[in-house]
Image (tube, rainbow, N blue to C red):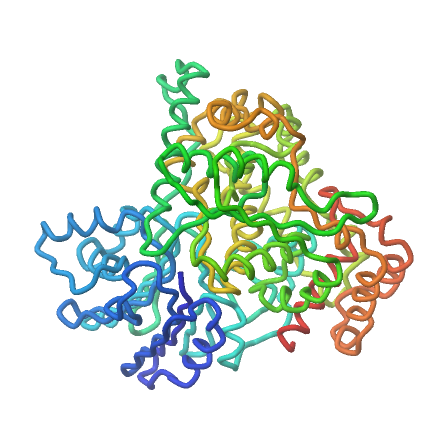
Length: 591
């Protein structure tokens, strides 16, 4: 897990190594263990390294292989790198390091754009071919590892974070109207290629982009999730599905223990993270370090779920740490949390992950985490209604959209309105695309491929990497996800959601953990926009910078300040916090 960056030019001029150095420096928290810059004519690469696999300097980046004519920067982890190394050795390749980075380079040389299909892992990489002048950019199947782009004239820059591109300078930082429309409609999710800024784009997941020396380019989508079911799937019993899922999840968890440093688990006390702990214990892991976080209660709502995480830690004998954050400390951490976001993200638990990661990074460099299970196995409360839908587009929009276009016009100043209703058009196209037969299949496809990527997955990457901590997500193992897509909807929806996963869990976990009400990362003092949080939002949205920007209609902001609790989105988010978070993020980036 690291931070990568670089610059390409297409007019024969030399790449700006100084700009690359600034981008690398901005990503120092992602890679505190090493740095490097390689500049050769029109191409310059930079890297910040977090040492996880091959702790020697042989694994340093940017990595150049003169014999193959390749230079590579890589962020992530290839869990099957040892198996791929053995296969490549049979093809005649010889290795100078034990790193997965070198495996990526030689796999690219051997298999080209087909190489990513062979990778089990999370990754973003950029490789320069000396002889052809071609540069390839690639992102993993679920976009777990980010890759941001800024192009101007005959120059393209890339980086693992959006703020790194800003550090290089000369970026169009005006608000992207389509990006703003997505942000205000899809609960702050802005799908690729858009971001909230006009001058910054992001490479879609599961994509290889080939860029020739003259700047011409072509995208190759190397993976798509299929919800098709064959005859064997139709005949499988509930017990057979549970056996299949259990075996696939055990393999996914085991894969994510590949490291030359210890691996722990973020243990919330929910089914998903608890199941990871239980499976590791069953596999013989001892002395496993686990971590939980809680906040002060507020407004009559508990701020922790320690009762459940304690139960799991005791059952499996983990080396467990509980972190309780006073409200004052949480509020004090908000500015740094917001500054750590590559894009504005409204979920209240960002600060929880930020502070938890700060503590965990004192002890470990790698953890497993339970994100993705709800989207893959249908754990959210709205999925039963969607499965019964006769109009999946209308029902999905009613459940998920924060506001329709008419309401958006009343909230956003007219000069910032996009010409088209991009969110509605985008969601309809996703839901109506062939390849998913049932309403639930269609909803899970967009949630897994879009909403998950640019909300919880991005949140975990940003907040953990702010402290040089690598988070691995076994529920997004692509073999497991492909299997889950074939499971009949009724099995996913039974037992209040995630039914087949709960069947697996019953062989591992206490019933109290499985049958509890669904929990979320509780941050009650932030969830209710009042007191110091209300003042923070008011200060941000009435500041000179906000007034000059003029994103929101003043009468709308007045209504929000007067009654924050009266303006809540269908997903129970605060409209005031959504507006303020965007402004706070823009100010944190000094925009």
